[in-house]
Amino acid sequence: MAVQRLILRSRRVVTPDGLAPAEVVVEGERIAGIEPIGGRRAAPANVEDLGDLVLMPGIVDAHVHVNEPGRTEWEGFAHATRAAAAGGVTTLADMPLNSDPVTTSVEALAAKRAAAEGQCWVDVGFHAGIVPANAARRDQILDLDARGVLAWKAFLCDSGLADFPASTRADLEAAMPVLAEAGARLLVHAELARDA
Image (cartoon, rainbow, N blue to C red; front, side):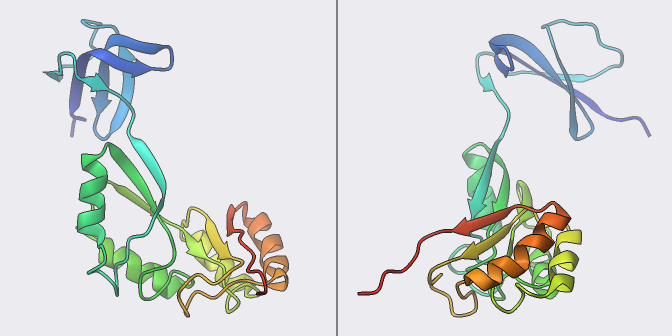
């Protein structure tokens, strides 16, 4: 089957060199190139002229709390991703807490993905959490990482959820070599609670 081609034309395309008139060539679901207006086309394509509307890369929001499953009434995938699309966000990265279960195990990640199935208006990726229960569990960290989590989140203070407790120094010292072995990123919510 031939790959469908679409050309998006605008007099204001954001390019690596700045704002310019151009055509963005899309093949299937991928941007194949940026060409001058009226450039040579190797294959037929549908052309949509956007006039003076700005055509730019989508925004990636790397810190979103989609509360589904478990707390969907706060905000679920349908609402979060529709709002993201309306604001120009084309990809969001879901944080591992505020849903139930929190994303600290392979099973919880599977539940998150199942909840998102068929509801997303934009691309969605998932962060996983480092908590005392999995910090020293090399197998759990590597299993989750192998399933494509984007990064790992840990708190040094109370997260506000009992099922996502703060990590200690010992927890991080146990988890960090495994994360380094996997080439994973660790995001640390770095507040330290002060004694009153």
